[in-house]
Length: 138
Image (tube, rainbow, N blue to C red; front, side, top):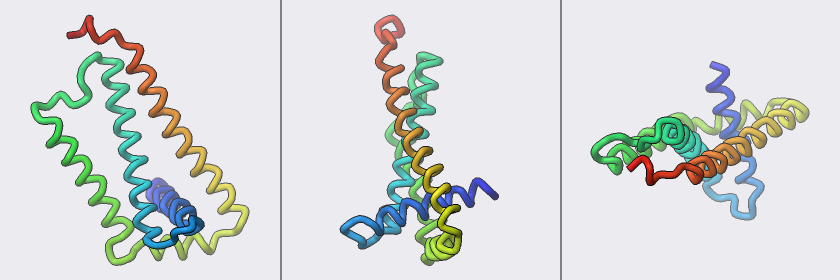
């Protein structure tokens, strides 16, 4: 349950970040999209590490376009039903608005460090992929 609450808090911080931008329209959709991108970065990293370790394609299926499409639909659909369906995001925003300023600041630091770690992990995974001599595995 704590993981789900952390997921909601991630949405809240991204929502608040979107609200602070000059263009405040559809902040809840921008926050959902940002979470989708972060999830895809984590999945891409996991697939990349699989490729680095096994020296095999990360999608060993006959039709990778269909597999990728199913993953995209699953992630976007799940986030839609968690946050945007029937405006559930408003409940999360109201809940976290009640937190103390110190608790929100500490949570914000944890969220932004986590986001930076996900991005750094993705960059590192691409670096590892670039070091593989693919000619010997073909």
